[in-house]
Image (cartoon, helix red, strand yellow):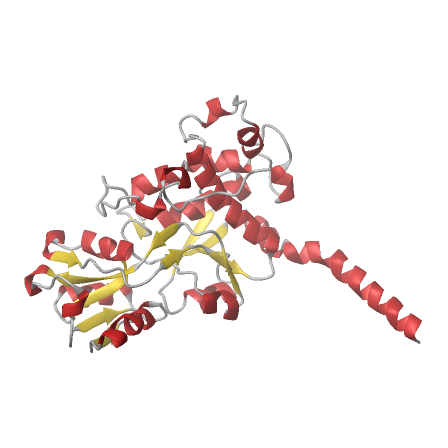
Length: 340
């Protein structure tokens, strides 16, 4: 009897191992059959994801989606953008409405361990801030006693406010809005004294104001907000594709590979560059992709630095500096594992 049970247990284990590759490739297979990646993004966030006057989706988060499309299909336009408000973004991913969430989403312990979701690499290191109308004359968050603060639901902002203000004995009123546009307009119209979000998001809000100089982001950064793309759990192949698409952007900048010179870099003698660009090795096959997957990402979209500068950099409406979102070789936090 014991022998039979052991045998059945062994066979069940073998069956589970044999079945795992098929289940691990579930999202990739679905995406390929569909012919496009369904990518959840912000409805309207300057610099991150917004529709231009021709209806074309632009922004940093949108470009991450295009990089994934390039990796899978060898083309950046095999992606359908699904605009999602903060309070439904995780449900959309859980239900299969989207394949990946690329929407200024903070990685936290509870989100990573309770939602059935996995986070990819951090694409932007941020922190929560507070913005006020310059007419208030407020210079610090310590001066915000009894202030009305505009919030969005389904975010980390309310908990961060509590964590920051409660130990300091500062009381405030939270005013929650379901929609991004209502949230912004309520602040612009004076219904709230303060608006709070990630500092980069506040720069995005200020950028679309009629007079951006009218609004001041206070100096305090009250939280850590590592922003990363999100996928469903138990699909390691798809998570690897999303993760290594991001790592490609970072590594490409580190090796000086740009959208303009990537063809020249095919002649590089650097072994890691050869492997990354598919000149040698079979890294693509390990992801169930073409060996030119990383080359396609760079050729069609650029590297991380190019993403940053065209969407968020100092020459854009947001005017952000790299700060911690600089390569590790330049004192920042961006670091790609090796391609080997």
